[in-house]
Image (cartoon, rainbow, N blue to C red; front, side, top):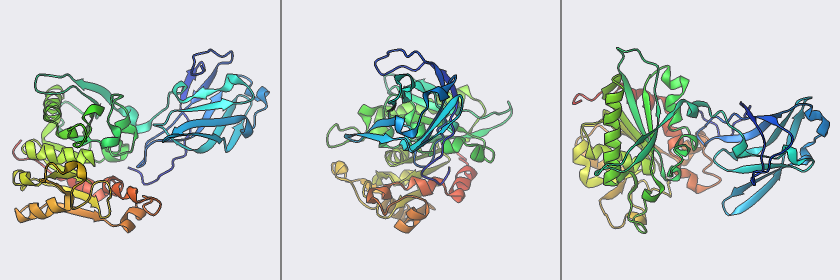
Length: 388
């Protein structure tokens, strides 16, 4: 789980016949290479390399290319910063663009070199290690798509499973963005973590219509009863499908809305999990008796403006039991819990590479220092569930 905001990208191999967005074929066919590994702040594309026969004949310069993408409500057009030229390739370098943003690159010298993001098959690094799966809806549970990382194991090995619940920004149906928005999930599948703690990594995606929004839709995200049942069913199904999963080492973690789901799952199914790591979330303080003996390490930033560390957002005003992390920690300690808690000051956030000095909303990004905390990762994988 790397501590940097901007990546430099060297691109992967795929042969494409370039089409415009209106699907008009071009007369010139070339290869596009894309490499976009994830980071704490999501995948960012900074360069694209195109290969084609005698590309030098176009006599290209950086002024011949323009990048267009949507940023919020605005259409942004930018020039390429620089290009590198060879006889049969051109490499474009530009200000980083989020991999999760659609973009087009236009060549003013020839339409044959126009390209869109969709024309490139990117090598997404650790994200590509996950295979897709689906839990089919039942009378008691919702349909739930997921991604699963499966380690190389021998038949007699027993290894843990980590269930990671994404935040509100990754809801949807593409079963992809939960892997590319940041490295909260993919970090657990990285060679660095897997070489030390071989494990399965389960990353479901919450359908967009169930995103937390108590005021408008009445939905409560991962805590929807049929979603919690879907998560439980998926875990049970995977334990049956993969006998190497150690039932005594099922861990759960999540950030923001995913931390709310983490609190919800452990208070509903306390015997299922060996340990939990909720990051910048909220939970139902009336249910803490259920988990007073569970190993928990919680994280929150002091000045989080999105999910307040102590109190509630307005969207939770209909349920006064929903309380912030630090208040939950106080309650659990009153109950005799050995819960661990790490609070991040603005200085801590800056040290982690989170630019809270540029925008206060970044104080919500407690997942960056939390998942880069080696002590916490070591702690998580050391826990066992004696009730399993």
